Amino acid sequence: MEGLIFGPVTSRRFGISLGVDLSPNEKRCNFDCLYCELAGAKPVSFIKDPILPEVYIETIKKSLKEFPQSQFITLTANGEPTLYPYLDELVDMIKALHVKQKVLILSNGSTIMDPKIAATLHKIDVVKLSLDAVSERTFKRIDRPIKGLHVKDIIQGLKQFSKEHKGVFILEVLVVKGLNDSVEEFEKLNDAIGMIKPDRVDVGTIARPPAYKVQGVSKKELEVLAAIIENIPVTIPWEASYASFYEFNKKDLLELLKKRPQNADDVKRSFSPASKLLLDELIEAGVVRIQEVAGVKFYKA
Image 1 (cartoon, helix red, strand yellow):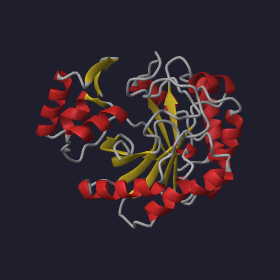
Image 2 (spheres, rainbow, N blue to C red):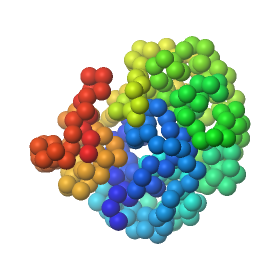
Image 3 (spheres, rainbow, N blue to C red):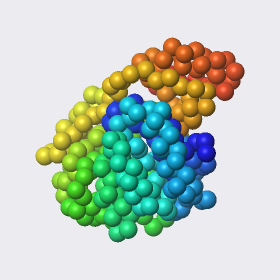
């Protein structure tokens, strides 16, 4: 099936990754974050018509043969991957492949209070969860959660998860200009993070075209805010480290640009000459469009 796997993607945070989309047909998320790369949508609590894990496994095996240089198999979604009802089975089946790639999940952290989901995440090598704000008002303004979700409950779930997790646990804070970029908000975050005790905190900002009219902050501002977080390793993901050129066919390139818009530097530094020519052809045909965000050019399918 098409659309289940995308990449490889050179991530600012995790190197070379093959993405596994657990909601390939439409956005399914219990948040409607202002900064999301996907178009805005009403928050939901489940993935409709989920694809069976056996189908994903066959596609993953084929993709790993094509892109053996991948470092991670990244579980993600057009939305929130922990809403996928067969996540536990899929993780077990990936682990049974005994491949060199580590398993990574990118989640908004909203379901961490569910013991079954927490148990599944404990099986994953690297777990990246989000915490954009500690105050309920700011949390609701940025992440726009489904009714019934409260950030104080999520923080308690993150604390418990961190105590029990044997793999790598990364917490990400996404900074939005004018919303959670104050010293006061980050002092509250510092207090919460000190109790959660993740292995690492990534403090980032908007890097790709967002769903709504919001803006990121500068690297200098990120550095000031990140310095407030104490006693935990903090990184500011900024520039990707490109290891090689990627050769895309038309189908794979369109999948990548649909799931993860690439900026001009991504193309310049990681696309093969043939892939760059193919991109030009798709732009000329109107299949790929160029969007400029705060002076940065992005290519979107």
